[in-house]
Length: 313
Length: 290
Image (cartoon, rainbow over all chains, first blue to last red; front, side):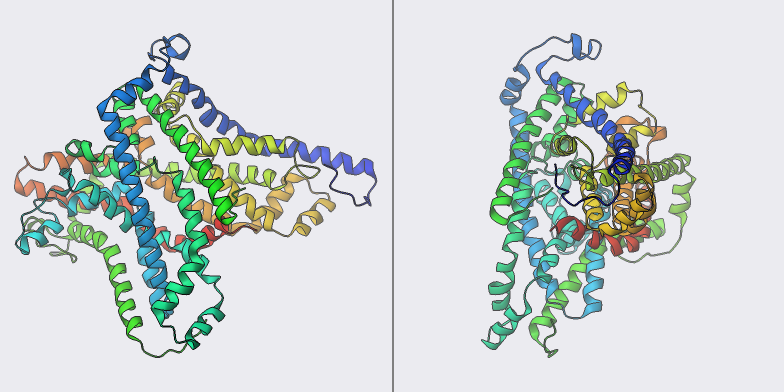
């Protein structure tokens, strides 16, 4: 403490009185947030004990039998769960790569649009899907991709192709998930890069123009390198989310036909754990996911700090 | 950064690509809107693309005849309003306290509280333990199950805290000298000055709460489900039944479904202009730190 070295102009007694009164108010202001966090985040953490039990709702956590690491053994022996972990990683990494590419490409290109009205109206439209829920978008895409009346299949038929049941095929489901995710987020995701682009020194472009560099060369040699710190931060931070392949999206698009290719950890926990009533197994998978996720987040932040000096707090 | 406005092929092609991307982003919405506004004859003949044929509002009037939809709509409105007001109050109060830091100005145990929130941001019990806590507290099938568990978002606390920190300290000090306590400073000085960040967080909360459906599905009985949960059920049903249904009935269902989808998206579309104004600002507030 002892940071305040200035000599107080007010009598010490009076100042002490106001501070005491004030800090009581401060605790009171913090109280609701602390209580809510304790109840809805910390109390459930104690529920993680279920992962080491054979939890029976009638017995509760205090009386259910302990089984040690059996649930985790089961997790790694159960073929479905290995498939689910693989699906999660596959979908997640592909989303990351495609998302990074599409947002970056869009940011670079929209940044070159000089017409202000065009620029803002394009942005208005491409940001919109980000704010619409996957429930609504799921409904829209299920309609568009329907094999009988979906617009996409109408087009395929008109071009002389066989209609495809996109959302019922293990071959097509993942590409559809990747495409719709990129479609939803490329515009909004570009904001962070656009903010970084504002900071580039215009003199660099002027010098490059004098040297005869064309648009493409300017983009590759000035714009892109200037974005590298931002790209590094975004990549390292999204590392923490690789076990979140997008519950909302998948749950709203999938159906039993594509469990094989589309089931991810979160949908699996929901289906087997919550709906199937297998609380202990579901919690064990959830815990596995949280621990790996935490390690990745901390590793990612550390990396982001080292690479680009990024700090969150 | 003003450069010569001379015509270039790159500019032209780039502008065309951008317009195409914008179009691709709204075509799906346009299609569903058109289907919902078209006559069932046109819909069942697969004639509707991006413009309504045989314009009518039948599917909307049918969708709104459903008392369950209206009830779910009301629950969504109630939930969203309560979440925004309570969430902003609780979050901004916490942010005010944390913006003071530790030491003489802030609270004792400041670091302990920061750790408490950071851990809560990074780690949680997961879906099933949280479900058990919420149901054991007797919140099942009450609107509070939709509101309380998500009311504290640590990221929002950080966002508002950083905004408070950036406000000129002299204002606060002047108020303290005039004899105001922390409550008065928070209510009369900090809140009025932080309208941009409060609007940003508020609008994000509105969008998040309006769109959220899972809590509505696991914590509420179907008759008390919010609109997005109702919509989720309405959308997945025809997906399974549609093959067996009569052609005509099926395509009426399609029209009705489109109307329901559009009703679900409408509130977001209505607040989108306000969102637009604030969200870029919000992102920058969140991303750029000293």
